[in-house]
Length: 129
Image (tube, rainbow, N blue to C red; front, side):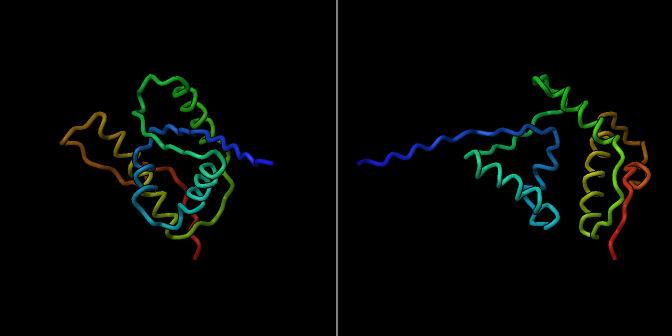
C-alpha cells in the first residue's frame, strides 16, 4: 500500500491603500498589533501563502471603490466605549497622523499651518490607567 499526500496551496492577496499600515506591520515590534499579526498568520497557515500588497488609493482596481464605501459605512457605525492602553493610543494617533498627512499632502501649500492633531482625528481616546 502506498500513501499519497496531496497538498493544495492557495495564494491569498490582500490589497490595501494604507501603505503606512503595511509599513508598520513590517517594521515595528509593537505588541498592540499582535492580534492583527496572529490573524494574518492564521490566514497564511490555513491557505499556504499570504501577500499584503499596497495599491494607490485612486487606482482603478475592481472592488476598490466598493471596499472604500464599506469602510466608510463601517466607520460610521456606533462604536462601543472601551478602554485602551497608552501604547494603543499612540498607535491610533500615529495612524490618524498618517491619514492627516495624506490629506494635507494632496493640496500642499507651504504657507498653510498645521492644525492640532486631536482636532483632526475625531478619535475618542479612553486610556487605561
